[in-house]
Length: 179
Image 1 (spheres, one colour):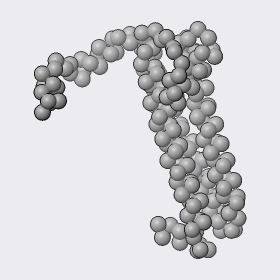
Image 2 (cartoon, one colour):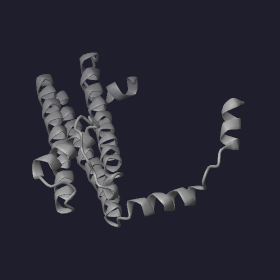
Image 3 (spheres, rainbow, N blue to C red):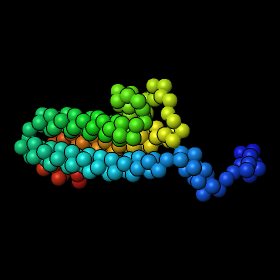
Image 4 (cartoon, rainbow, N blue to C red):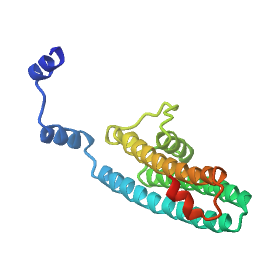
């Protein structure tokens, strides 16, 4: 009841008012470019991760049929390396976007900022102008969602590998029937 009373008695703005105040505070149409960039990057990330996972599962099925189990672990390791490369590439893309928009005076500072925000480490002490205060939120959301997608894909790949070790079946389709 106490929390409900506080909320009820608070002078909360409507969502439209809050959105307009934040948009005015940013005073920067370029921020919407950043939001669209984040959405596009996440869509491309999803396609890339699905391609990696699809290739892994195809290779894994071939290796399982041929009873070459070590190769499946090698393909998993390669998938991990590719996912890491995608994430590093996205950090570089964020850095280039920030360099193009002149968010920071130096390129290394921009790269470190993009990496820390994408990974949500937040170690550095960056002084952003008012127009860019929401930028860490946008970059960190894209990083959180991208890492989540990658983790889910790698988890399913690992599950496929572990499923082979527990199976005595010669037909990989039987593995799916058991689970």
